[in-house]
Image (tube, rainbow, N blue to C red):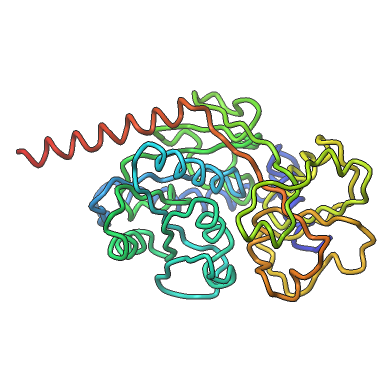
Length: 349
């Protein structure tokens, strides 16, 4: 297991309780909290200007470090908005990308240039996606290229108040707020009680006292990598791999969650946990005697057709089937209707 993964796992364990390591880091958390609080209040008090886009903006984020489920929430939200008649677009920072400035994501964009999560969101939704360090600029850039868009969904933007927003969606996973301390002594990167319009739990049950909706999550079939890139949604049911030697590879924030879901499906597997946003310069599964190698979609986007690393016929992709409670989608549509009604009333006056 890479050193970076071991360090990340140790921190995640420390953030679940107020143990020795968390206590040692606790003084530093006050500095982080002070800086983060001042950053937010500078915009709230008007010391720094917010930038508003000409269409409603929905921001999806969390208050803890690490993957709480923002990307699948954005994907599910965009799909539901499109089904409701909206024309949504997505803006993201594009964490880990090598390019600079503003960039529109296409199906042929290398994940290294635009970021693995923006590429995955574009492939899964078909919606226009723009990446940029400043999300307001990315939103203007996207609207200039796609003036037909009626709503912008911002991936991971709660802590970036420069972009004015109309709806905030707060996502939690099983960790809740962990030990309740700020980084680096705990997982918090924002106030645990910060306001939000909608709360969604990427977990079997609510992990905080806040009212919200649950999301159903399950793993799909094992789809050959080449077919996944072609848009296939069918493959080998996981149950058919119960007696097969399987290696599961995951370069995501919480690989153990993925491995546990595979085991719950009846698979007996070896596992290989890689760092979140792992960059594939070689095939870590090379030499392993597995008959099938299972990848997450976040890993698959970094192995495009025609690349040497994607040539191994054992490679299969297991997608996450993520669907929020239908009332979440209805509540979001109701909020957007209210936003537009308020804007129309303001224009009349």
